[in-house]
Amino acid sequence: MEDVLYTVKETSKLLKTSPNYVYELIKRGMLPALKLGSFKIRRTTILNFLEQNEGKDLTDLDNISSL
Image (cartoon, rainbow, N blue to C red; front, side, top):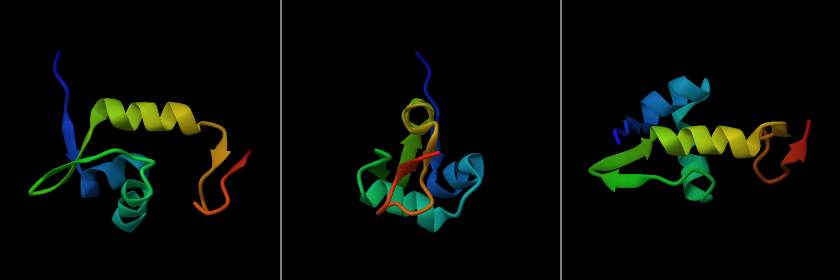
């Protein structure tokens, strides 16, 4: 099984958000990451994150609500 690792910057481009937002997701434990020099996020982790949070408003991570 082949899995791809993305940097925080690459992940932010995939999610169309800022790197700081991705760091906040990692800090809060919402987006699991590996630390290999710098943070790396698995492709499958990103897909799982999107699936689990579909239909939610994640604009304010302190107040997540349904759309």
